[in-house]
Length: 133
Length: 396
Image (tube, rainbow over all chains, first blue to last red; front, top):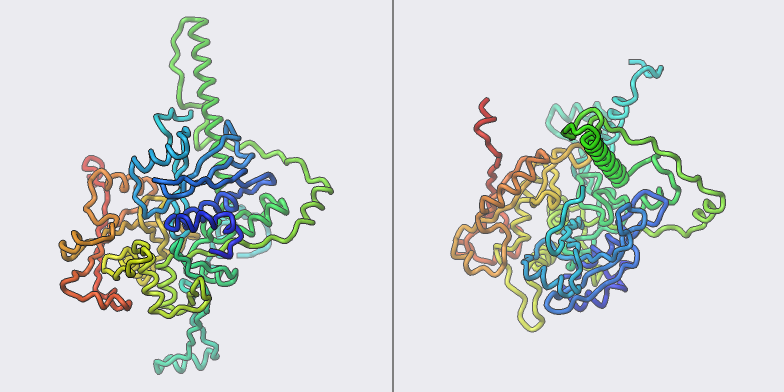
């Protein structure tokens, strides 16, 4: 993992939170390089940054903006992605700690990383969300 | 059938051609190949006596063990394609299944849209069309509702707006609008594309620890290298390191934790080995809320038929109380959760199988056997198929 070109940006947080290092690495690469669509337009997530969540979450999360060409309203919204492993247990207090550490955004994306490098994203919103027509 | 003349319809030929291509590319179910180079007469004579000169060719691939992500990485392009094409082992870490990241980036650079689509590109096209269909349908429903409103205001007659019918597109009747060609690249931008520096392939094939152990122990076609020393690890080192990857990370001052029978690696490996040795292609099942998916020939051929949930069962319940590992699914399912998983899987036409793996009792067998794979013989596997039964509908 150390020889991967993305490692230098992550090295500080990998040594600080070793148990969640794998999921952070996989999610970072997936957003930066993997989310790639067949279009001659900008593909990757823009302004990707790593945010240290500190105690009691003991992990780092990512924030960034979606690729410009995906047609959703509010394309420039800053989205938060919190990586975790499939083997971790998540409780409501865990989720509320994460929301608090990110200063209460409307919604976060939980990126669940597995060992064969599949990542499943779930959107968690605080409160009830009306479905889109 | 004559191959000259184009009076056959295109669609069946395209399907048959793709099927034959797939059968050719993915012809070997495992990385080892049996080859016999002797002439057929010698082969038939020897065959009568019961002998054969077939040789077993085992390829040698290398992978690095990464304890952070609990996986083995194969960075060599040839090794990755070999392991994927012969048995569908592993997954490209920046792709949906086969490592296609470099191909997609090159496609994108040359702007060869529509010429050869990787599975990700097909998926994106399908999603874009579905999004457009939903927008069209919503607009049609809104138009019908507005028309009903107008009629009510004008004549006072109440018309119930229809939610289906000739004006509203449905899945069967909607067709995507023909794609207008985007602006063609000018000569300057084309030159700029060609001047870009060559792409470095940063994608690797990621094998789970179970797949990697299966390949190196049973088929002997994978060498696992230690991440720090670059030395190939011995089988004993691999066995112990893989088990330790699943135990809680050691605190520096305390001694390394002892190996236990209820290590998640062992339990999942027993299930993986069981199904692989029966000939199924076993892949991860997180997309459907289960542990594994079983494919008859491989993901490129048909969808998975079975979804496996591994349920560990302790032979001796006292072991469960004293265990330090928090095993998933060791407690019996509650009906709510079981119904949820069953619903999800029957929606996608997969059959749910509960695989019970029995963990041997510590009182019966000493923990020393854990230092070698021989302990796998102590575990047993039983399957239970769960299907929803509706008495009113399933009378026949």
